[in-house]
Amino acid sequence: MRYELKMGAATREAWGKALVELGRENRDVVVCDADLSKSTFTHLFAKEFPDRFFSCGIAEANMVALGAGLASAGKVAFVSSFSAFVLNKGFEQLRVTAAYPGVNLKVVGTHSGISIGEDGPSQMSIEDLALACSLPGFVVLSPSDEVSMYALVKQAASYPAPFFIRAGRAKCPVIYTPGDTFQIGKAVELTPGSDITLAATGLLVAESLRAQQILEQEGISVRVLDFHTIKPLDRDAISRAARETGAMVVSEEHLVDGGLGVRIAQVASETHPCIMEYVGVRNTYAESGTPEGLLDKYGLVAREVVAAARRALARKR
View 1 (cartoon, rainbow, N blue to C red):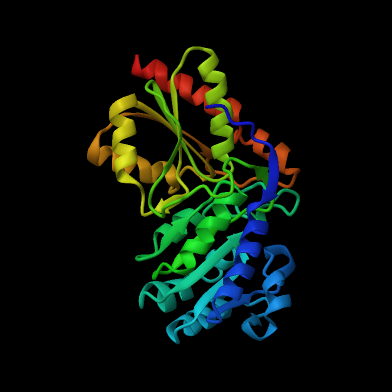
View 2: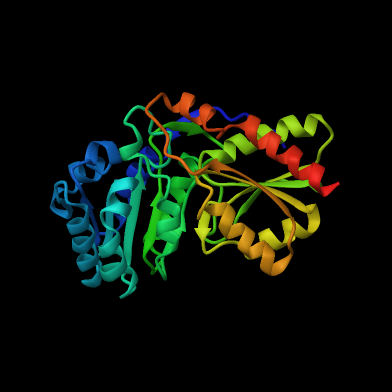
């Protein structure tokens, strides 16, 4: 199957639209934001449901605690800010008021990764998946396009657990079509393949599909898996891919330390060890620049996925 990968909306926009639909469907949906509602797209909810929207100012820790309190009172509570702020500044409250009591709080972090661009490293979140996955009981999502984001936000609202949902600032290629179905905890196999598996999340799913097309022209059979759910991981998909292809490349817009690659490697080591390579941010913070320029400079592009696949296949042989 060949994907055209035409550019669509940013996942933060899809999150905002899904939130409005949830508000129309359920009066118990409430939203808290930390003075960034136009950037996080929660302003769409605020405009239609001002009595259910709480602006907390530049106080992410307080926002998380308020959201957890609303969730404890039976509300379907969403809190949202840039991932760098809500995870780093709000981590103690996420731990104590959400993870420990297991309340039904939904945390949405936007402007994740380095594709935020010119705003610079202080607002880039390259540790958020690792931090969110370290919280016991949390479900962690990282959708790859507007369609999957919209669908998974809607699912998360009715799923009784605390969530972290990762969204991006930049527009991204559309992979799915409206009506496609997703299951929390189950990876999507986008292309079948027997020689190597390209596993990815977020923006790197599209780059992995581009890499697959290059490798297929060389006669290499490539399986592409979209891990929209980082926690809980699809252990069956990982074990099967490791066993059937014998080599994997994991790609993510995140530090390779503590991200999806580390989590997949853990599952593979427990089920069916195989050769693995990783594409991600390595032991550094990025700088200010255009999203496209940063992704290229730090190797979060199809070219580097292809190179990693070739290394893995050489080791496999």
